[in-house]
Picture 1 (cartoon, rainbow, N blue to C red):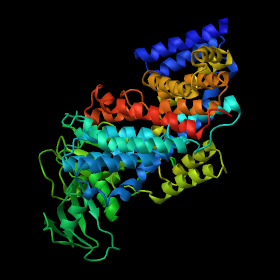
Picture 2 (cartoon, rainbow, N blue to C red):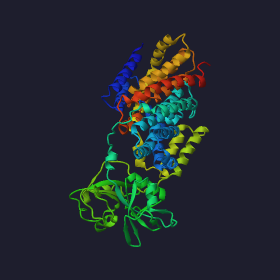
Picture 3 (cartoon, helix red, strand yellow):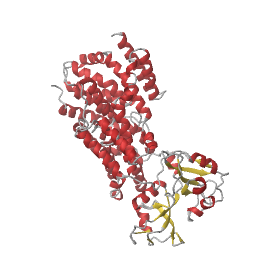
Picture 4 (spheres, rainbow, N blue to C red):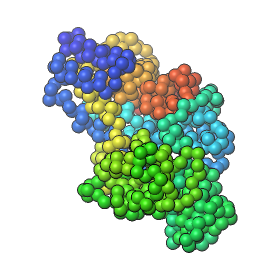
Length: 593
């Protein structure tokens, strides 16, 4: 072992210990590892920042933006809506939601697909009495499985493609992962549909911040468009469309107000409805029926053309100038440049028009205004901003454009007209241009810690290969597997990737294990492609812990899971993937030339 190899191994060993210890953030450890690598001259200074311009980083960043824009479109909810009333049993809910998130993970980033489906699943679970613990983990595991089918579904596939480029001069293509991924996914879904009962049925779930903020419903005013056909719907039908989550508190027609209108009352063009409900339910009804918030179209004065209109929640303070006054009396739009969209009042059902409602201390208001001007307006009015959360209320949903853009990007990659990085970079840019996602939301969609982790570890892990360290480890493993069946070495590589992922993060696992797997294949006289595929599949399938992948972390609190719950369902699924995946890889990607 040379000095450079020893230093490279030592740096990587300390980095791995730091990941396992968990005392510091992953991205901080990766930054320090890169800094030490440059200092020790293991990583050449001119190559230190190659990771930030690497296609891996670009593809992951763009895939996150595209996924966020697609999530905002509401297309998935629209497609699944006819099926939701028929989901009575736990088994049917698991099959639909795990299957839907799996399919969605094949075309968007898996964690984005899960984020799209979770609110829908939780709503159905609440309505039918299904424990969230029975739904969310199968959905998370389905997202991990679905992500193995295409390059953009999961980070390990993106990274291992670049590793192949570095080693063999040509990357994996977008759909090279599909034959193995589809087979493993199909078997995994069958298992999840049958084995979800291994999960705890009654587990209390801690209330999330968003749920706490939604404890009291909002009241908002909407106008029925003039293009509506008379007799299209009634008050009762409108409530049923929202599954009882939205109530018509009052109807304003021809200057007259009807409080608590009868369910058979026809809703006519030009009517103004006072709706009460949780903000997501309100937004869904407004979007589906193409209703219009009565004040959302009033122009907002902007300091600069590049400003964005924002919607924010705030609580009326005890010393606020709004206490005892209405929006009309204070003239919020003319004087302060904001629109009052909704009001929530604890313990009191609002039935009067928003413009005449006298506000009280403790009321929660939803305001629309210019991004830069809102902080000053809140201070002037004596309003306290609530916790930051995504709030959609009557905004325009771009359903067609995001779907078309994503579909075109996938086709361009499939036909090899454009590389994955260029296709998804173009898709992300177009999502912003057409208004499917705002720049502020696009920046928020980027997973900064993950991108920094990958960008810093690319040159650090490459040092293992450049110094010959990967070949050294591979030679040791080759001595163990020499004379054994090649499929045993293939399975061992996948098992190592599976075992390392919970501690190293799946991206770091691929960057470290993939070069070793390729070198091992070379020393055994085998093809490197099966071993690279084994690393990608193993690193993508962490079913044993809540910390190895963001999907598992995302469902932990809403599902009320404990650490020990993951192996209940994950251990047998891990064994299935290891056995089935190894066999499929050997069939699809021949081990020998």
